[in-house]
Length: 216
Image (cartoon, rainbow, N blue to C red; front, side, top):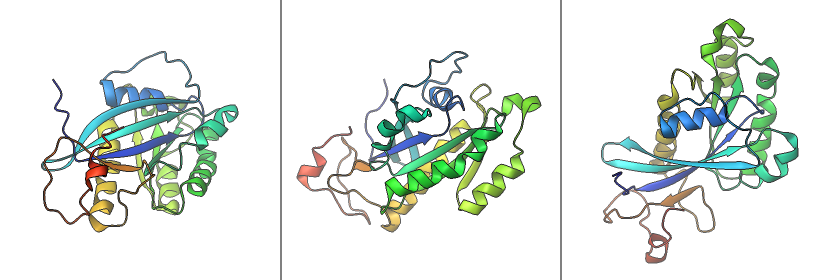
């Protein structure tokens, strides 16, 4: 049985063109397996998993998988505002999906401001090296330009899947420690966990009302 205790919940959103592999990436992270055939996401889909960001500190990652098709964009935009982090995914075998990264970053930034948001860039499907259209160096240079962390991944082999979510969760928690992000009334990006005895910390402790909100 999975221990349900966690300290915080972070809400993350995955963005990118259709068919870049967002759903397969999440399925591997949450279920530990690769699915050859997944139906295209319609609107949004939802996953959760616990992660440890410090010794004894656990967070629940609430992961929203969005459709990349234009006809669903008005739906997915409504999920931007309540997210503290965004993973922008492109397919290394599809150059157009890489060229659209800037559009996804701009759109996400516009809808997630003024709060500080953690972005991470992912070049997916490294198992298809022979069909590569975007070099790892190009991905790294684009990430450097936007000052975001960059990984290349594969849901087929599991390459860097754990590292991606560990990196973004740890970065958000670090900002939380510094007071640059925090729990806000009416915002779903970061929420207090449940079941953990209250303790002294450098963060603002929850009120009784906040502590009763639960995780979702």
